[in-house]
Image (tube, rainbow, N blue to C red; front, side):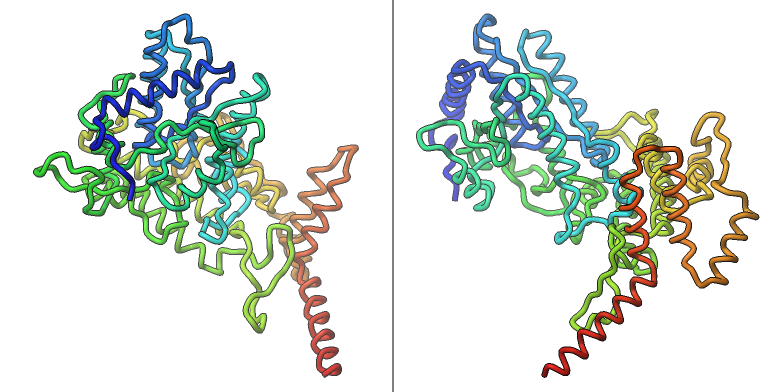
Length: 484
C-alpha cells in the first residue's frame, strides 16, 4: 500500500520538495518540456506543480519552453472534451498574463486514421481486447508526432507525465524498468531522443486528492469541480478521498472514448446518465449497438482487409470474419448521424450542469472531413450510387456539399446490364465493381505500380480462390491420410 506522504509530512513540505526538484531540473539544461495532460486528477496535479514551480522563478530564468499537450481522439465524451478545451484556454490565458513560457495545445489524429475513418471508411471492426487498433492511432501517435517535432528542433526533449507508483503494479514495474540509477530522468519507452520525468510519482491517491481539493488551479479552475466530474462519470459507490462525511459517494472512473467497445460494459456514459446527464443517452445507445453489430455475420465480410480468405474452428468449419461490409458501414453511418441529431436535440433541452456544453452549439459526432474520406472509401469499395451524400441530406437536413449534384458512377441502365452479365456468368458483381473502380482510379496515371497489388487483393477474395483453397486442403488431407 502506498505511503501517504502528505499525511506524514504535511502538504506544504511535500509540495515545496516537488517545486524545488522541478526548478532544479528545469534550470539544468536547455531541453524543452512536453507535459501530457488528459484532464484527470494526476495530469491536473502534474500541470499545477509545474505551473507553480516555474511561476516562483524570476522572469529572467523562465527561458525554456514548456508544451502542454492533450490528445483529442475525436471520439471523446462531449462533456470531457468541453472540460479539456476550457482548461487549456485558461492555461494559455494565464501563461500570457503571467509571462510563463507555457503553451497548451490539443492534438488530433490524421483524418485518414480517426476512429470513424477507419471503422466507417475502411470497415475496421469495432475494437476489442484482442484487436485494440484504436489506442495507438488515436491517443499515442498524435502526441508522439508532436514530441518528435519538438525533438527535431531541439535535439532532445523531456516528457513530463502524471504517472505514479501507486497506480498499479504494472505502472510501478514500468516506472522502475525505465529508471536510470541516480538520475531524476528516465528513459522513454519508444523515443531515444526523449526522457521522461514524473514529479508526482511517489504520491498516493489520497495525496493527489489532498493537493487538489478545496484549491484552485494556478490557471483559475476550481478543482472541486474535478471531483464532481469523477463523481458524475461513475456508477460505483466508492470515493477516492472522503473529505466530508455528509458528501455524496463517488467512484473512480475511466475517462475515455464514448464509443469504447474494448470494455464489456461502459461505466462513464452510464454514470453521467445516472447523474441526470440525459443528453448522453443517444450516445450510450449507439455505443451498445456498435458492440452488438460487431458479432453480426450479416454485416461483416468473410475475407480479411488484404482480401485473403481464412477459416476458424478446429475443423475449419466456417470462414472467418473480416472488416465491416459496405452494407454494414452504411447502416452504422446512418445510425451515427441519427445519434448526432438526437444528441443535439436533447442537448438543447438539457438542464444546466457544471459541465454543460453551449446549447446553441451544434456538436458534430463525425466531422465533415471524416465524412469526405469515408465517402471516398465507399466509392472505391463499389458504392457507385454515391450513397453517403444522400444519407447525410436525408438525416441532417442539408446538402452534403453546397450546390452538390449527386451523379452516380454509371447510369442505372448500365448498372443493370452489368448486373445481368455477372449473374449470367456466375461472377461476383462486387469483385467486378472493385476492379473497374481501381482501373478508373489509375486511368491516365503514368506510375501504375500499385495497381497490380490492388487487383491481386481484390481477386484474393473471389470465390475462385476459395475453391482452390478447398482443393488444396483436400489434397493435403489425402496426403496426410496416405502417409499414416
